[in-house]
Length: 135
Figure: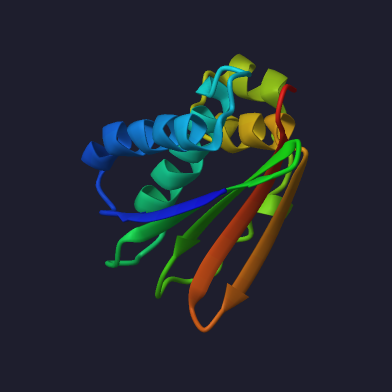
């Protein structure tokens, strides 16, 4: 089962994205687990793409069930590269001590994902996240 859709690079698209994930779970027959981790991962990456990439095109989100795994792919078109998968680890204690914001969302995504890969071809930035269903 695979489902793909493009969303406007606006924060107002987040509600539609969360609904898109629920629709995928329903169509693919995934009863458990709760899709909130997947929704959170997509929300964090999508938000970062809006904030930090200079693109003007819609962002593509593709969900694909692969046995007991879910593949999540976000593609941002006509942007500069940023390798989310290789971004440096965040020192969470230092962030808390300094009361700084930023960096925790990507840190959480990396902790929840089973694998992250990044591709940059022809100014298209593509992050693929593999998440085991049920974990």
